[in-house]
Amino acid sequence: MPAEPATVFPIPATVTAPPRCDFSSQRGSREVHLEPKYGQGACRATVRYLWTGAPGAPTVIVQGGISADRDVCASPGQANGWWSELVGEGAAIDLAQCRVLSIDYLVPADLPGASAVSSEDQADALAALVDDLGIGRVLAFVGASYGAMTGLAFAARHPGKLRRLVALAGAHRPHPLATAQRSVQRGIVRLGLESGQVDQALNLARQLAMTTYRGAEEFSRRFAAGPELREGRFHFPVEDYLEHAGRSFVARFDATRFLALSESIDLHDISPERVRTPTSLVGFPSDRLVPLADLCELQRRLGGTASLDVVESPYGHDAFLKETTRLAPLVREALECCHGEYA
Image (cartoon, rainbow, N blue to C red; front, side, top):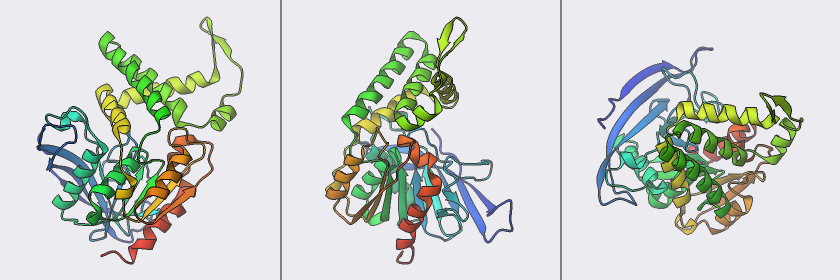
């Protein structure tokens, strides 16, 4: 795939108030040299990225779950981002004080000869991009869910390029029960590919995934009403929510991409002892995909200093998306503690 020419936009810091500074936004792609973990040797991979914020400021890498893309915040041509409440001018990840770098995750199709993609491959792609853009060393890596896994891989493999890791709802390995749940989702999608019912299968897989992303307390509160008879059968309140989530996902995601990145989560395995970068962990007791016990183990075993903040939330794994107001001071504090010492 040819590289996407980088487009550099000088943009005002905000459209609702006089800008405090001029921001620079670079959106494009670079070809980087990688040796995929599950490949047959070195290859060239095209990495699509967004790099935006205050010119000359230190860079913060931000990565989310497998369905997140490089549009983590608002940028030219993109009115909003998937984490705009945490990334923006004056936000916890303040674009007036830093530049944010984010990529679209790689899949095997981006890695010639690779049978699967690993969190280490994503980390190596980011490290190569950091070099190619002339950044050298980033202030922090803020990762949530699969992004936290990628951040751990980055810290283990490229410690000299990173000052601090902030990992939300992600551990050094997947929990076996979460792997079982994702395995069923992948089985549904593979059955759809074999039968020619791809959209229906991806829709159902996403519906099943939603039952693992959210917490029991939220479902109990939102969907406690009784069923109603519609179109000859009983419909339960939760069904409309799940069907909407499935349709929305099918409209913006690809089945083969889903299979590759879902599998990548379950291939993830990083030795905590190799991570010597100062690390801030955030976990949610209602998270059934990343149990708090796994984060406690990770904190104990990390090779460097590590803190663990526990945030009570009814939203389960998705609390990293839903609890931005409560997460903001934790992320801000983690970044501020290394801002003054950044070199």
